[in-house]
Length: 410
Image (cartoon, one colour):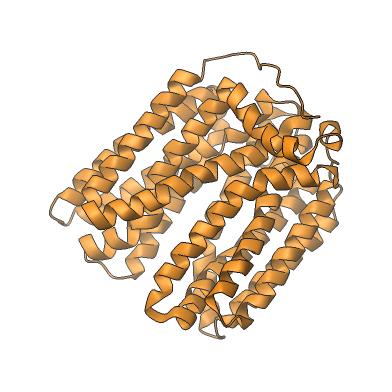
């Protein structure tokens, strides 16, 4: 991966993204404590609503933001969204009403919905070589995994010294540092197609692109397979670890860390794997492995807990992390292979929006089924969703196919 790191622009962008993600992780911890201060026993309802607002912002705002900002230089866009997020984080410690939290979180996540696709669409322009681009994608994936492991530990350490309000200050500094790093780089401007596209046509163009290209439709099906498997990890880990296995709260972090470790290891191995196997082979194999793991989780949760249960859960979560990473990381390669450079921002924005629509479906499904039918049924149902999505991807995505022409929005 060192060849990707030698690119100065990517180095600054990667560092900016990693710093911003760390700030977001601190805000996640602080937001939970703020919700408890404001709502007490209703804090979980507040956080659940906040998560729903985040997903709604991601689904609704990303395509619109892409269309509106097509005439804006990418560096200006990325810096502006970082400044908006910094301002929101700075205000959060001073809220006194729950509705204020909802409004501010919607603003923050709307800015993220503009930032992330623009960041993703910039990376292909920096690496004409597919090998270097693959390494850059793996590094970008590592940034997410490292954040999931480091932010809770950093927050715990800071909370021994300061109150949680100061975590929001750390979030603000993270976004400001990200903006400063981006200012120091020269980035490609908006594509020529974006300068003539209307907002309404531009907002729908990426979605129409996904519908027109079979490989992109298959990519969306694979994203649903990932969302089904990932939802049980992020929604049900605490219930499974503490309720079913009777382990302490600290074990929840270990279980989530196992998921992150599986994802990180796979991201490190992918550049080598993708030199030997096609994207299609790697992604489909990983997608079909996910429902098999969920079937094992269903058996685990249906059985009486024993000494084997805890290591089995850690192994299952690491396998889910590995499978999700093997599907998600090569997605950028698929998009770049299917669309021209001018279409990349719309395509990445559409994937960002549509993939989070998958999570908006699987998150509540995992929560409601666990509460009403129990963990074994939840794991089995999500396994069925994951298997159906993987099968659809196999049926939709040919081994190779030319990209059909899609009329540019005028």
